[in-house]
Length: 133
Image (cartoon, rainbow, N blue to C red):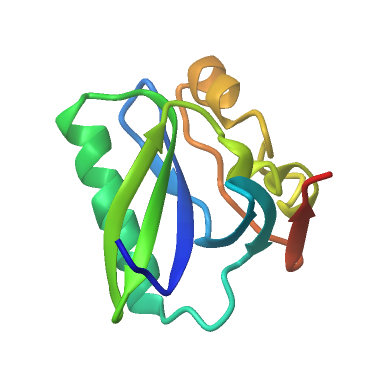
C-alpha cells in the first residue's frame, strides 16, 4: 500500500477502564528496520491525533484490553489506515523514557496501569527523536 508516512500512537488502559494516549509519533524505516521516531509527529493536525485516539479507544474497548497498546498507522491523503498492533510499548514508544514528563511513567505505563488502577498522564516535556543504532 503506498502511503505518505507511518505514524504510531501509544494507548494505555488501566484495570479500572481509564484510558490515556500519547502524542502521535512519526516513524522512519531503513531496510525494513525502524531507525528513527519523531515525537510528536511534525505537521500533524489535531484531527489526526483525535482519529488515532478514536481508533485505539475502539480496539481497547472492543477487546476489553488492559495495559499498553501500540497502534501503527499509515497516513494517506489525510486519512489513517491501521497497519499493525502490538500489546506493548513497541519500538516507536521508546521515546517516552526520556521525552515524557517524569510525572508520567515513560516506558512503564503497563506496570503503572496495573499497580495504580489508573492510567498515566502522558505529558511530553520536549520534542524528542529516538535514533535506533
